[in-house]
Every structure is written in C-alpha cells, then in structure tokens.
Length: 329
Image 1 (cartoon, rainbow, N blue to C red):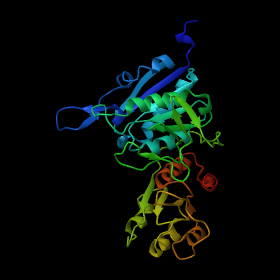
Image 2 (cartoon, helix red, strand yellow):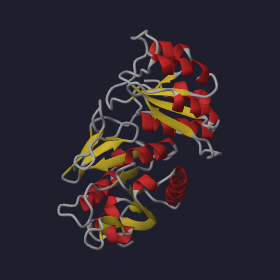
Image 3 (cartoon, rainbow, N blue to C red):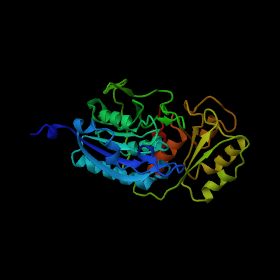
Image 4 (spheres, one colour):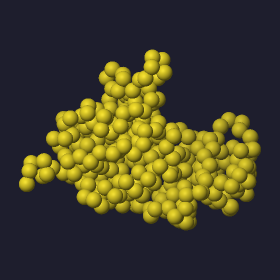
C-alpha cells in the first residue's frame, strides 16, 4: 500500500462566494471565478493530509443560493459518504453561511463531519483569509473528535455549531460568533481543541415537498398590520416574526395573530441577536404569555432566520406538529 493510499479520504467542494472571488477589470469589483481546484492551489498542505476528491458544485454569491441548490449539495455530500469519504469540507459565501449550515445540519444523518467555511476577503485582497480557513476546515473535518457533531462552521480558527453560529459583522475578519455560548472549539497550531463533548442531535428526513413558503417579518416601532394580514392571503404556510426584546409584538399585531395562529404555525424569535425569548415573564398584550395563549410558538435561542428554515423543513416533512419539541431548551 502506498503512503498516499493510507491517507484519509477528504471530499471538498465549493459553491462560490468571496472565497472564490477575484477582481476583473479595474473598478468592476470581485466576482466568483475560482473553482475548487484553483482555490486549493493556495493550500498545498491539503494533499499531504488526505486523499482529495474535489468538486465545484456552483459559483454563486451566497445570497443567490436557495433551498433547491442546498438539496443538491446534500445529495452530493451523502453520495460522497456512501462512496467512502471520511470527512467533507464545503466552501461558500459568508452572507448566508449561518443559514445554509443549519439547513444542512437538520438533514445530515451521518457521524462523518461536514465542515463549512468561507472567506471575508477575496483572493485579490491583501491578507485574504480563504486559504487559512480552508486549511483549518480540513483539519477540523479530519479530526476524530469532530465525528458525531453534525455540520460545523469553521472561520478564523474557531469551530461553531450550525444552530448557534451567526455572522455578526459585515466586513470584519472576525465576523462569526455563537452569541450566548461561544464557539465549540478552536484550531491551535493545526490541532482541534473542543471545549465540550458532542451533544445529542436531532435530524429530519428529506422533505417530500418543497413548494411551501414561510414568511419572515420583523416587528418595528409603529408598524401597521398590512403585511401581517397579507401572510395568509398570499398563500404562506408558516410565519416567523423577529420580535422586540424577549419576543414581543405590538398590541395591534397581537390582535391579528389571534386569528392567524390557528390557521398556520407562527413563531416569534427575538430580533436582538443575543439571548432567548421569554416564556413566562411579561403579561401585556403582545408579550410572550399573551402570544402563547393565542397559539404562537416562542423560538427560544433560535434566531429568526433559522426559525424560518426549521419551519420550512417541518412543513415539508409534514411534521409541523413537532415544532414545540424542536424548540425545547
């Protein structure tokens, strides 16, 4: 057996994003253009660490990804595992990374690590972080302690769980955090150091329908109820509200939700970016006690954007009746 064939099998794919971008004509800005093979030219160490299988699934800015594309990505990843891959890395744009990671995590049934990463600076910028993030992601994916942790996000030498990670800065290099709990671990001198053992995971089956629509609205000062009332008439099958503070809406919105919540699942999360929704503290009209009496679900620690993904998948598997169980702390 050759030395190369004894290395673990690592599958790496790209979806595009800043990690794949470089400048064209002066003044035109950067656009996706580097396929996965060209991205990996900047990380020669990878071929000494593993047998690589490389794929370019698409080259898109991550704001243009959709659920249909992610289901194709999932099919690729599942196929790689079935063909013997022992670890997987997926690079993409950071704009929607927290959402795509959670989507894939909810559908990832394997102990094999699926690690996602990206870059905050393009290949054309000084100090671009793409190569370092790709290397760290591979180190995490190949680490034995990463098994059974589902989909992980690695940025800036930190390891985050898909359910809690957030992009909290638009341009800064240290743009990713897990508010309230911190990262799962760190990559230190190429070694992955976890702070906690793997937790219990819940996984959904693949959705058998994908035409469902879930709306996301943000509560804000003096907002009228027109958009809220339109949710049902426009054919949405679920609603997520990014609420004030601990998960609150105005009294006028509460009146609408009294009639809307019995007809479709409604979740209220906090728009604050840190901390959970309350369950039994405030009693005024539009607060959590009032909303729960009307059949509204309080999202707990889950951020509004991830609530929408969870609800979309639950509806797509006809499991919306399980929503409360998925929101248990």
